[in-house]
Image: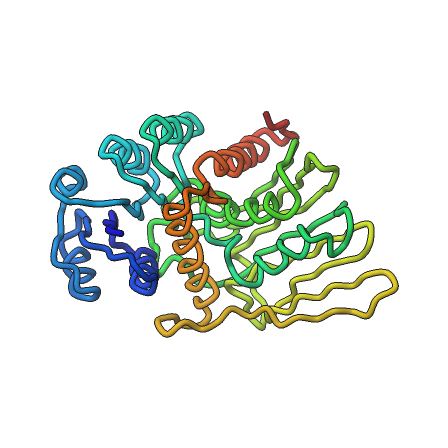
Length: 338
């Protein structure tokens, strides 16, 4: 199976590492408008065919899929170009700048009869996945409350400096992941209310957000995110989870401990730490492992004809939560979701 990578930035290096670890897949061409990044990535991963223009690459190469790892503004034209070229696509998050763009991208790939998956990797992290699967298996009965928390003081701007200049920061970049985890754990939301704050004066967007969600299944959850938190030990990049249900409580604690407490049963404690892949580096190894897992899932779906769990269609629901959160924070009101 032959693929091409579009975008050779900071996070795309993880994607290239993961592609090299997946059997039967080879990235045969890469594209980036920055000649230094393009040359460095080609040399690092032994890719001979390089392009500065994605259209030229799609026209010249014999491919099965493209991995779109650019910033969000380029996503719609690149996804639509992939569909026109008859290629499957995996696209980085945030999926699109607007809901209209996102729907157009899904429709374009549907018309082409090709698979579109969003690289929404947080729900594929080993500890988060263990918690989600336990909940889906009825570990605490019917959930009625959840908290999904990511709080850190980690400097994310050194590797991704554009994050400091965007008028939208933590909900669009990080909160989108945590909202997706809440959806995966408790189902789609019907209403939300959000508040935001900017603590770091050197950035343009918000670096703290708290979001209250009502889920269609009857549960309520709180999603809270911060890159302004100063505490030790630093928990980056761990998402902490607590879910209360009719039959017990589940917690994903710092240090990758999954704790399940049920009425009339002994407390269950599992070590759900992610494996350290040969190419990974702590503390990023949690995210890096999930990159390989989600890309393997994409390949498995292409080979088996299945629909990716984080398909473009599914991600419309997560993106709608992001848009509603910004609208709620701006208006100071609760937002109903379609």
